[in-house]
Length: 369
Ligand SMILES: Cc1ncc(COP(=O)(O)O)c(C=O)c1O
Image 1 (cartoon, helix red, strand yellow):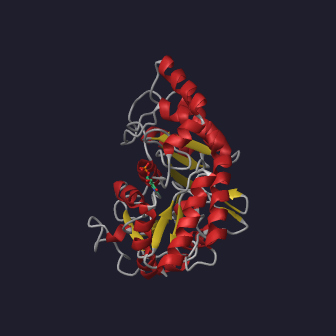
Image 2 (cartoon, rainbow, N blue to C red; image 1 turned 45 degrees about the horizontal axis):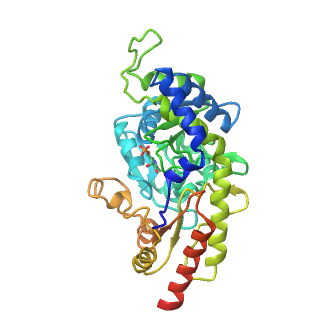
Image 3 (cartoon, protein in one colour; image 1 turned 60 degrees about the vertical axis):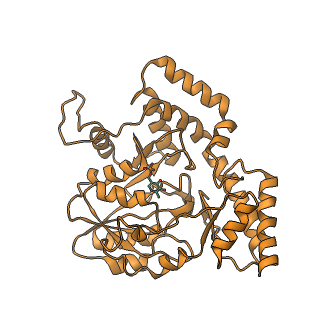
């Protein structure tokens, strides 16, 4: 079966460097928050430009919660976000004690719709959390205008978009603070859980460093109520290796996406939009079509691991149904979830596999339509 993503291929592609990094950490005898985490934070920050600070944390959900706690949000503070995202986005907002409010998505970008954000603004709105879903940058310029007009914070969820750009500027650098997951399947993924927060303010980075470890100051006195959300040295060392190849790997993903898009352009399929002024990180390649369950089964019967991201929007999960404001008025999201289908996408996907996927989809449309 050709998987839709393949973290083991990423390990094999950089095996000797990763093995050396692991050995270095094991030999050092220091396993949590040490020199590898420090170095990863510096390298991740400078990957985004010279004015940034990064803080490694335990996972992307914590990164979201810590961003919101770090800016002082909590009970009754509303955060507008899409329902079309990983459940983790909303879990992170609630973990911080905030109240998520769902906005609809734009049908082209599949990211949060600025028009829908405006409809959700209320007296308790404090922040907007766009998600660069599948690696597609959200409409950051418009979102920042809305935030400025209504005095709101913006926290970008970049968990699926490491290295994506708008007009040459990396996502994660538009808002004042941004959250990333480094879960193994991500474009920048370790071999376990991991996350990062990116910000412009050194003071804010210091606050997050305190929050991630019991609210400690340098003397290990808890000066604010904190958490345990530490990044371990093994993950940091592995992420340092992967970071060196991130831009190249994203290019490989985009090259595959361009081949898919060219091959499918005359089929009755909605394709991911690849526009000139943006670098799509192409974390997932997601099409939309009628009878998608039939096509998914057909692909699986031809050894192609087609999948759904996601089977349900967040407001359709039992844990969130009928209790999150905005969840009853998401027509574009609802429509999308009847038609979405994820095809294999990872930098090491072979030419033969891409050809097989393309010809199988073309055959299905010839045979069944
Ligand atoms: C959009 C999005 N936000 C947040 C997360 C949370 O990341 P983690 O699984 O590392 O907690 C993920 C990853 O699953 C994600 O895809």
